[in-house]
Image 1 (cartoon, rainbow, N blue to C red):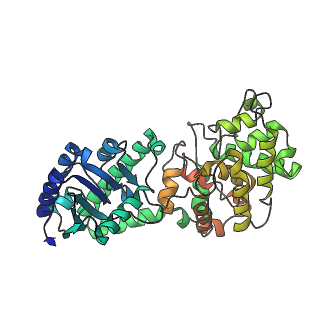
Image 2: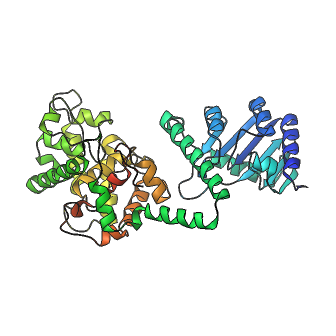
Image 3: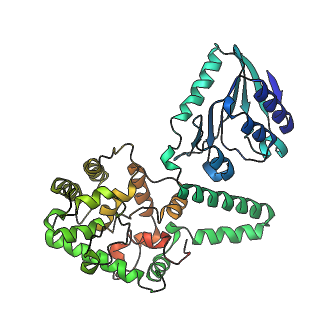
Length: 415
């Protein structure tokens, strides 16, 4: 066993083993593109057996992500409930391997200026320790981001997060205590759950879209319209197909003239299956699917408490309509739209337009339905939710209007 007590020594040993090994497996929290080891790694990608790189806290360089995301033997990991934080390296030399465990990430700091400590252990490849370490590294592979998750939007969002973190770190390093206290106060004012009713209502009322200033009125009109439809007909399937499309949030020819504000609170226009189901003149029109969606929504009462059990029953009923697996699918936009339109006092629609701010506010990825429920419970603890002007037109819809605070297409920077 060898103790490596400075970053340069660690870097030298890693490079030495990389150049001479048969194959290399690793799992690290972060990788940046400013180290001698990374330069050597790019020249020896064919030696990588398994490589797992974390993206939590935006510590990995976006250039590394964009360079390596499509390599079949490298996976990128984003945790939901915790930070992916291992620093493990295994260099295989045939009948033995060098296993590194310690504090160093594959960053310019971890392999350069930081104070680090690592152990390098020589083990037989048929030893229990080797098998256990490799099994653990391999297990990380099954929780990495799938290929279809690497979209232009994903890369852009990650780069923005990375740059924001770099700016924050530099600001923190150069700030005195008074500046930090002031910044903390500013952040507290921007936390959704810390807003009082007056602050919340002012932000909601002043949301505007494309300079026409009508966002609040349009949102309010949609919620009033849907509330009246449910009161009149009781169930979605009892409404005309045109009225159903208002609630689904999709438009076919002539629908805009029929009702034009349906796009607020997360339109489902991008889900082609739904467009087909609700097109009564199209070949994919499906009365069975429409009734299944309606029956699922009926599980949620129009008034009173909605229990977690009712919520789970709703999820179980609505996901199969689009052949989604409720335990694996993360289509929050789909199931939260209907919840929000029927019960805007209890639910908010979550979608690509409000995802970045709400995930940052909540501190976790909300896409799995169980975490969505927890997020709603978290929002219900807000001061604006518990105490406010009950005569205000937004009060009865106050959870749905959280979308106004986080909506990226309206010209605002409230949060």
